[in-house]
Image (tube, rainbow, N blue to C red):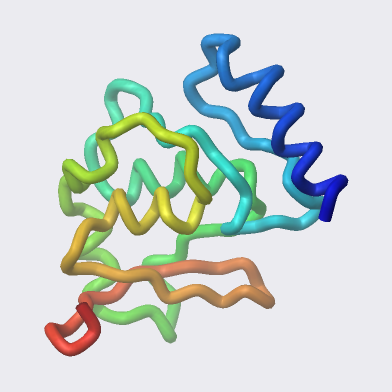
Length: 127
């Protein structure tokens, strides 16, 4: 645990103020969606799909929109504009960054074993 916290602290110290707007701290060898990232999206990224693909880049996960098991609404959600919640630059996990990009009406469906993710609408009971 001490090594884990030390690696995060060192990463934040070295990279947090260096001007890098997108940074992933080497938390663990295979942190996946729990990896830390600086919530920042470059200019030109406008849709949920573009933003999520950008945030997923260092994780090894892929975004699936056309698979047989994907919810039919995944393609619709992917074309939505990015939620205003995602516009604040902050240090967070990749999982939370994606939740911020999606906003309140959509959620993630994640296959941790195969490192695949897609989207679905959230009903009122789940909010």
